[in-house]
Length: 362
Ligand code: F6P
Image (tube, rainbow, N blue to C red):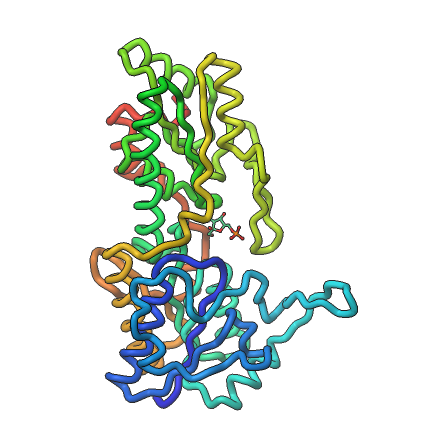
């Protein structure tokens, strides 16, 4: 292996730089392999100045830094790239240009660090156009199959947990119901883990449609037991039984209502049905920023190194994964075959229920 390239696609997540650093260091120090950085996801293959050499000096000091030194692109699908032509947005298939660029660069491998959407593009490039890709699963949502955890999730969950801790003290002082709306799209991992870690009283996730009466009953039970405040962790994709999630998707893009997301809706419904005083906090992109936790730094370093080893062994179309404490690899196709959601049979759900946490359904 003489030359590989690395790119980061989709929304950012804490730990991207740690993976880039591990890729560069492992490739250069272990394999004496040249590394190229691709700017702004797949766009870098098409845009002027989108490819540049990555040296050991470029990755010095980036381990604790949030974001990505390569930049990310939300709309960077080479099979359907949105571009402006005479002030009008048009969709172009630029995949052939990407292939030509990869060939002219003599790349032996392309390491794609991304979530579900970006990895799907990588799989398509591999299956349809024989691009030698290796995937690294990134997302705070933890919604990719084949790996116990995606990187970025642990950091996001710690940020969410800290927010719950802070809400607890003010909730108790003012005898209020504090609602924290968390990210995760259609997966409830952040809300579930952070809710358990932070001691939330109610956790609402997309996998379990809720009844506002159940939430109300939990709050009233607490009041009867002398606890005049409650904490509710609600995933952005949670919805009432028979209702719809409140955000909409356009391709890979998420559009959240500026006001009146699910947190606000729960607050209003509770005020109406229970007569309690509520306040809503939407944690938003704070969950995506900041320095990765130790867990994520170690995971990213292991995943970055493993990705380079896979590339050196020409095991393309694979994704690095954490399984039972070991970093292994799985086929990208298998990992992306179906969406990953919180399993209702998991011990996490059982534990939450047995701890008296209301999941809004009983
Ligand atoms: O997939 C990661 C994620 O942060 C989701 O949890 C969230 O719904 C979405 O991205 C937000 O996307 P954007 O950065 O485009 O607002």
